[in-house]
Length: 232
Image 1 (tube, helix red, strand yellow):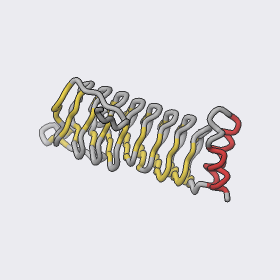
Image 2: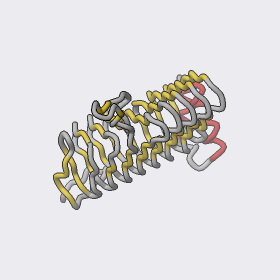
Image 3: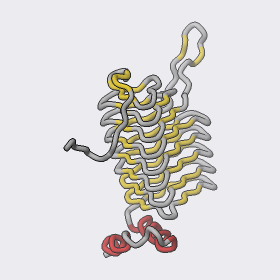
Image 4: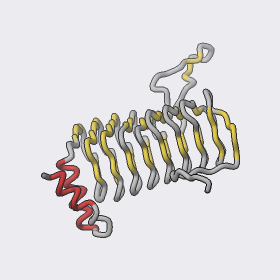
């Protein structure tokens, strides 16, 4: 019954801020979202977003999660361990599954508007590190983006750690194929494509296609469209 009401109201909410707010609240309450939160001053704002089967697993203080209007997430795990993390999901984003994973303190994951994910797992793992994803990106399923290794590698000569986290930056209108992995310290510039099962370990310039393990640029001066175009 509730699902039918929500579906009926869906088409009427776009230009009505009050209805949009009420509808997003109903979604949150009745679409089997889960909140497991320990700590203080943790804030979740979802005014105008539509969440279904989203799990918030938070242990820490002062964490902030913001879903902007029109964002739609289902079957997503948001796991935070530590303090003062930030997750921002832009307007009209679509997530069909996956996870966001935060460790230590002060990490950020920012996703621009109109980006779509079939299933992606995005991790920010070390203090004050960041993963930034631009607008109008299209990510396929089983995509992994992580800015750290979760464990330490030690140089035996210096006895010091050599694998600290590094920020990741993905530009606007980037297409990642299925099973792609994006590793720490990488910048993927706008209007680029990364082919299926590639592992990105170095920067990819704009308007290019990169494939392989590790990913290498194979073609430049390209763009792409969500629309399937046929020549007449």
